[in-house]
Amino acid sequence: MPVSPATPATAPTTTTASATTTTLTARALLLDMDGTLVDSGRAVQRVWQRWATEHGLDIDVVLGVVHGRQGYASMALLLPDRPMEQNHADNARMLAEETADTDGVVPIPGAPAFLAALADHRHALVTSADDALARARMGAAGLALPPVAVTAEHVTDSKPHPEGFLAGAALLGVDPADCVVFEDSEAGVAAGLAAGMPVVGVGVAAVAHGATVTVADLTQVRITADADGTLTLTISDGI
Image (cartoon, rainbow, N blue to C red; front, side, top):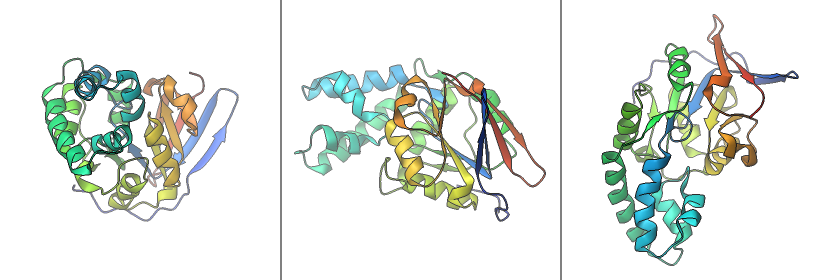
């Protein structure tokens, strides 16, 4: 995960709001993938539908758990009496299936311009997908993979644990308090908040997850950068 050396943070993350916009400032952005940059909902449902059927589980119950978490962690919640090694084995198989199945994977509205605006600034992908799946889905959506990526291989604990976001901040050389997270899932929002970072919730479902501010999609976010590297996010209210 190559990263250019970072200068020390000089401006803390701040938040201001008006009747129509919210403004966040930060030194770096930490970005979830599925549901935040990439719409992979149909592919996720296909893979988990097969797994749910195998285990006699209702797919709606399963989908209510899996978003944002690594597969083995979701399985542990859904089948609490099953040995963890079986969860890890199933997870490895399903990651391979998901990597091969990118039909219908598209960018979240606004994602291409959003990433283009960040190209010369500190940002990292922080996803529960492994490296192969992250590359497959970002590629299918026509999005460039950020040069810094924290994937499943790089953490011990799945979201909602904050490990991934804290690792992303460390790799970028930025204090966690100077980062802003973009997330869509309940587990992801909880992880960002637990890391001490403001969270921009993406998508209608994120309204209920307690994010700092929520947008329908990334078209509602405008990014500008100061000469010292401070990023200003101007976020249109409403969803």
